[in-house]
Length: 403
Ligand SMILES: Cc1cc2nc3c(=O)[nH]c(=O)nc-3n(C[C@H](O)[C@H](O)[C@H](O)COP(=O)(O)OP(=O)(O)OC[C@H]3O[C@@H](n4cnc5c(N)ncnc54)[C@H](O)[C@@H]3O)c2cc1C
Image 1 (cartoon, rainbow, N blue to C red):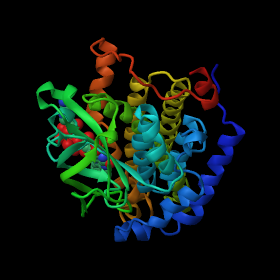
Image 2 (cartoon, rainbow, N blue to C red):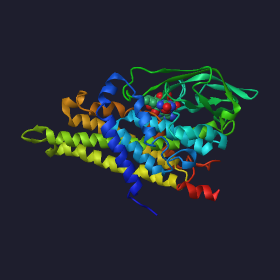
Image 3 (cartoon, protein in one colour):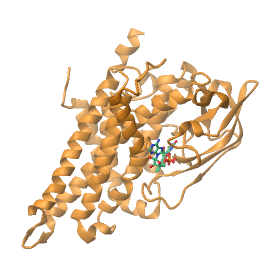
Image 4 (cartoon, rainbow, N blue to C red):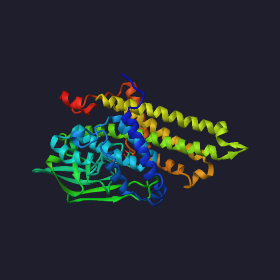
């Protein structure tokens, strides 16, 4: 059954997040962005509003809503700023949903429950100085020592590096097995040997915290191995199916913000005796934004619909992420164009949208990686095999009763 409408609950969540963004982010964001200040109060407020575990079952401390409600939250948050959606992407999409999919009961109780309640903040450490798209090139190692693993190495470009309490960290337990030798660990900031350092001078997402994390012989208890030894690569790819979904949904928020700002400016600005919105070449840019927004949403909600049914959605999520992020980046470029020289200054928000819209074209699979993935699916060079663990279908009670 297909349904293109929102449920009453989804409409209420959209309105609640929109009101929150309008009141508590919009008035301050250009100042936070200019100062490179990531306001910690915003993440606390998201927790108070029960938005840090939107699609995590209630029995694990979450709100128990469906996966498309998470998409709605991400779209509305990114309408305010990409930094806050990025925080939800790593906390919920890349970390909590991964614990839900791969964690054992003990790990879920210890880590997922406080994360879903918003009491603890979580992040995801995959990228390294010499390993981005080429995940198997990572150099962090985990060596078994009795009841512990000793972790050494570092990660870079990690969102929430200075503020997260828990990290999923990917490391080689057996380098000779190439990507089949990567394992995933739950690492706590408080573990001796952990440190972090923010990256300064970012193009965008300046109101967000991004940087390096270092592991200096951290002793991680064996209970913190997620899944089995050697399952890390699969876990990372499954995590990205969820992270990319939130990035794609967020990109719709940037396109929507570009459209809103451009419509307003089209009404205000006059050239050659009429509002610029009456010029057909300006209309072309507005029409492209509208088309991009609607196409992106359809791709995002289709991926969410598959998630709700517990079906594999790597292909559909990759397409949604690639297209929605490209559309948002193009929309931001056109929004600056529509604003003329004023768009080139921070008097208007569109230059921030342009700077912010670039990172999502790079992170969670670059534009080029998604292009290759889509071509490979179509050409039959890539097929998704069933995973040992899947995300629970929604509604969660039904899924849990079936087990
Ligand atoms: C703001 C921000 C936040 C981030 N947050 C996180 C986070 O929380 N956790 C995390 O683990 N990582 C994070 N990242 C890192 C991000 O996921 C990586 O930057 C991304 O995976 C790309 O890797 P790379 O930067 O090393 O680029 P590279 O992989 O070195 O790629 C460089 C260029 O080569 C192209 N390229 C590479 N391989 C191919 C190929 N086979 N064919 C064609 N072209 C190719 C790429 O598309 C790109 O254009 C973040 C990045 C940013 C910018």
